[in-house]
Length: 107
Image 1 (cartoon, helix red, strand yellow):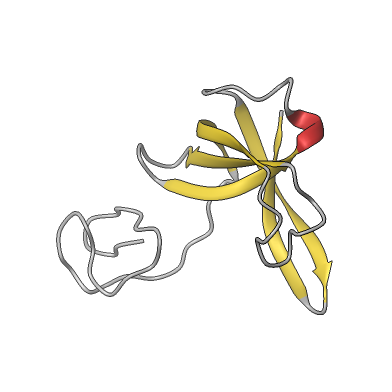
Image 2 (cartoon, one colour):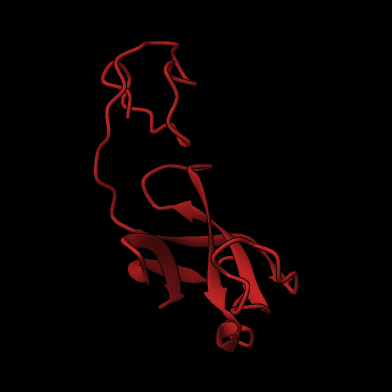
């Protein structure tokens, strides 16, 4: 987040997208948002997710700011519940070997 203007920049970068300041730092967010868009992924060559296909790729607009987008996924069991604008919240999934990834669930 930019210390000069408060704008959240994601993914992280050296300059603020809103004001070009270089005073950026990591700051916690709520972990809540809305599904901005989604698609069902059948491809089985996504590293770490080969056995999960098909799954739902989602883009989440985080609640802190319009167009603050994060890419994640939902299990295919959520297919009937997913829609653009659906509210979601983050949880952290341990994928083994010390890898923990942020995932979302519909709330």
